[in-house]
Image 1 (cartoon, rainbow, N blue to C red):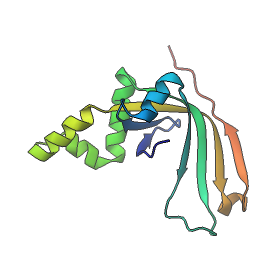
Image 2 (image 1 turned 180 degrees about the vertical axis):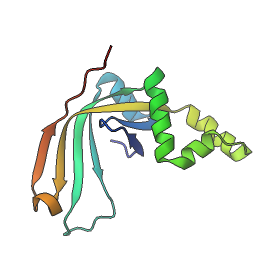
Image 3 (image 1 turned 135 degrees about the vertical axis):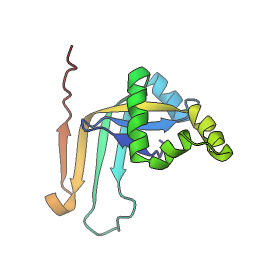
Amino acid sequence: INTAYFCYSSDLELSFLSDPSSLHCGNLTTNPSMGVAVFSSSQKWGNADRGMQLFGRCHQARGRQAEKAEHRYGRRFPLYAKVMAGMSREEQLQASQLRSYRFYRFLPRSVKILDERAFGGGVFVVASVRRRRPSK
C-alpha cells in the first residue's frame, strides 16, 4: 500500500515516482500485481461520490518508458520539472534526492468505476482494458 502522486497517458498508463528500496517497490519485484484507487479526498460522506479502482501489473519503467513517464510527470506537476532543472542550491539538493527514485509503470487490465451522479447510488461499472499492439 502506498499513497503516490501519479501521472497518466491517454491510453490509461499510470506512472509514479518512488524509492526502489521502499517496501512497496520491493513487493512489486516479487509480485507485479497491483491495485490502484483514484478519488478526490475532498468528497463528503453521504454525497454523490466518484472514483475508480484499477487492477493490473506494475514494473519499474526503464529507457524510453522512463523518459516518457518523467515528461508526463513534469507536465502534470510543474514544480517537479522546475526542481529537476533548478539552479539554486536547494533545488539541486532536492533534484539529487529525486534522481535516486525511479518511475514505475502501471498498466491496468480492468477498471471498476463509481460515479453516483451518472449511474446512481452504489452502482459500479466494471470494464476490461484493451491495449493496442505496438506498431512495428
